[in-house]
Each structure stands twice: as C-alpha cells, then as structure tokens.
View 1 (cartoon, one colour):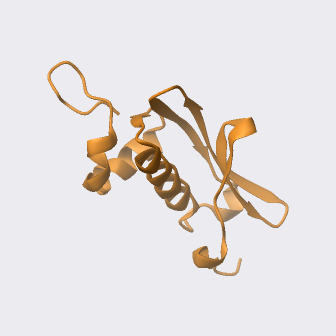
View 2 (tube, one colour):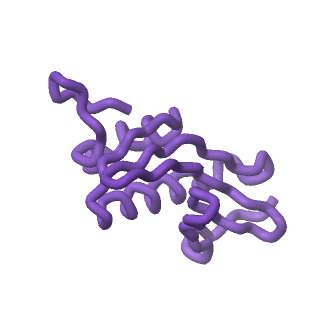
Length: 106
C-alpha cells in the first residue's frame, strides 16, 4: 500500500449523517457524532483496515475537535480513540465535559 498524503485528503462534516468523513477512493473513514444545542458527543471512529495506522483517525479527531471549538460546543468523547487523542493533545481538554468536581470526562 502506498503512503497516504494526509494534506490532500479533506474531512467533510456530513451533518445529515452525523459524521465527519474522509473519502479515499471507494473507502470511507468516519467519526460518528451526536450533536445537541451546546454539546457534541464524538461516539465512534472507524477507518478501513487497509488504511489503519496512516493518521486518518487523528485527522478526523482533529477536524471534529476544531469544529467543536469553532462552534463553542462542549465535547464528550465516548469514542476511546478520541478520548486518547485528547489526552495526547491537552489543548483540547478545555472543550471537554466536566464532572461535578471539574475533572474532564471523556
């Protein structure tokens, strides 16, 4: 499999399907979400097996978090991949839902 140039791949917010998408040929990488008035739950990331390990999940997570930031949404990361991404990129912790003690909930 050839290397993927992430800079040439666009993330699309398919609001009708409640997911962010990256199309690679006939394949689709997705991050499903549920949005409410002031929050977004990033539920599940799925990358086709042939493209795992090439940064597509990270690109989807980054786009979703930047969308939440631009829209002023609180983030709940039900998806374990997105929760781990936020832990590796603490600049996004400020967006996360907090429990009653103020601790980020992923």
